[in-house]
Image 1 (spheres, rainbow, N blue to C red):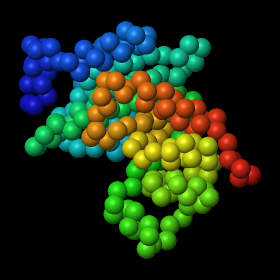
Image 2 (tube, one colour):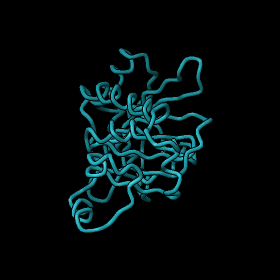
Image 3 (cartoon, rainbow, N blue to C red):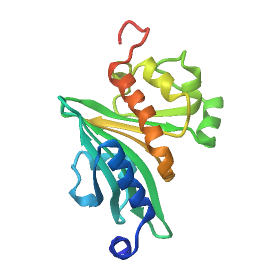
Length: 212
């Protein structure tokens, strides 16, 4: 019900954020739709932990494009979860390529509790020399033994330069997002440039380890 009233409100009054997203689309050659129902999204995308929850969901301010001479598809949008007390909004950068066959991986910034556990507990580090990354990020994976083949030092080192971006990887999808912290319109393309560097490092990066 909350999503219905949100749609109605946007149809009656101008939504400054949607206007800003549309302007980005015009300036940077994206196609644009104001909103998409979550139920129409690809089933494999719905498996990501970001999209957990049984309340209403929407994608708003969707920018999308296909890469020339490639099957790579890119979308940028605000994911809205209509919770009990308030709506939760996360800005998402989504990439899809049918040829990708990643296992289920999540890289999340460490909160205070995870940092404290790291001080007193032992953990398995796939690239132990990346001290800054492991200090800032926690990795969850279904097949932990695959990480040394699917990730690399260049990607993790770049990601470790900050600790705001969440990353989920599964099958043919990769999403980078700012969880419950929607980016300002003025920040979106700057972050997009950095995330493109992250994607390039993930797909084509290198490690000093012989097995990568």
